[in-house]
Amino acid sequence: MTIVYSKRSFPPPPFDQEIGMMQYYRLLYEGEHAEIFPRARSVVTEKRSIHRRVGVRSWRKVEKVFSADNQYIVANFSSLVAEVPADLLNRSLGNISADTEEGPELDFVSSIVTASKPNEKVWSAITQHQVDGRVAYRVRRNEAGNVWFEWILGDQYFPHDDGRGADIVWIEEWGNGDRKDRFLRVERQRLEAEGLTIQQLVYKMDGDNVGDQLDISQYASDYELDIPEDVELPDVNELLCGMVTNDETLTYPRGRSALRNIDGLQEEINWTITRDSIVFDKHGKPKLAIPRALWDTVASQNQRDYGGRFVRNADLEVVSYDDKTGAVPMYITWDAKTQQSFEHVTRLIKYMLAISKTSPQAAGLEEGKGESGVALLYLWIQSVIKAEAIKDKFDAAIKAAIRKCMILENAIGGQNLKITDPVVEWGELLPKADSEKDTEEIEKYAGGVQSLETTVRRMHPDWSEEAIMAEIQKIQDEQAADSMNPTFTQPPRVNLGGS
Image (cartoon, rainbow, N blue to C red; front, side, top):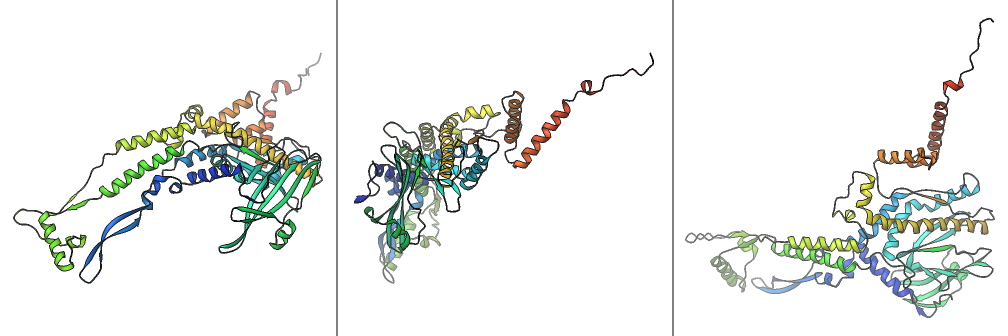
């Protein structure tokens, strides 16, 4: 059930077709459209006729190839499709903590969050998840005992067919210049009857072909690498890695790119804008029109001087004026009507956004402002629904990654941590006015559905732990003081008069 690499091309099937599509969508996302769209190549070079001097007094008409790379206009809305969910979730991810108020689990989860930096890296992970159709993660531990998890590319994660293992693969190159030695590195995790086994493998590569397996110890010695030894972790019944898929189906269980089905629209957008740009470049500049008699006069002079009938721009810097006909050179301009082209581009963009479940407000096609948070939500509803689905997957992935860190620490570090999912706090996807946000939080607290600590944290997400706890204490002290009603706290009346 494991993957065989020796004597085969890399990547092995069925991952080769998936990785090929990943490379295609990465070029689409990065705006390298001249590499993937055929019509883009038609404007990469062009031929122009020029006059070249071939002697002291002779010229010859020749064709010269000019580079016209800048003429192909890329209006890359594909990047927007991938980045809008990442933008929404990046601002939404909040505090990550253990599901306990005290104990070693709280300190350990805090150290994982500090080392892994999920808040800083979630944007790139979600963007890559949208472009590639999947992103993966794995748990790491160094000799100093530090444990963390890291995101890895989807084309480096090869799950086994039986669901009992996975390979994390990458290519290492050593050497200088063009003569570099290439090696395929594999970290194989496999669930056996006794527990989890983790192996380190290495293969020699010749181009894209994988050769024989090499001794990992000798490889580490030759290139002075610190490679972990193979380990067996008894009683560990889950992999210390995982994968987050996008829009998976029964026929595509490893996910699909969010950029699928929009590449044709993206090419048509580019081509329509490029076509208008070429037209403007050729016809939008003022053209100098000269009388026929003047052209014949200059061309005849060049015929006598250089042996060819042509007119250069330099020949017209000083010209004669025809007193009889009043014929003088004049500049003419060409007015292009491009309204239909612009409307066509707008329609294509809206089609692209509809297919990719992206709100038009995200592309600036419609006004994206609302008078309240609810109004803004309905304007961005398509992107919010899409981002909410992605959030659920990354919420589960972050929890699973931190839980696996705890499992690894118990297995190798000798700890006895209670294995539970951490608490991942997510805020609002869309921004709100501070006054509106504060009012909602206060109403939740007053209604008894939210604690005081949670209310303070959400109202002041940028405060430190000390500031948050100090604010909570102040509020509790003031509440205690306000609850002391003088009617009940005064001593009872005493009659001091005689009987």
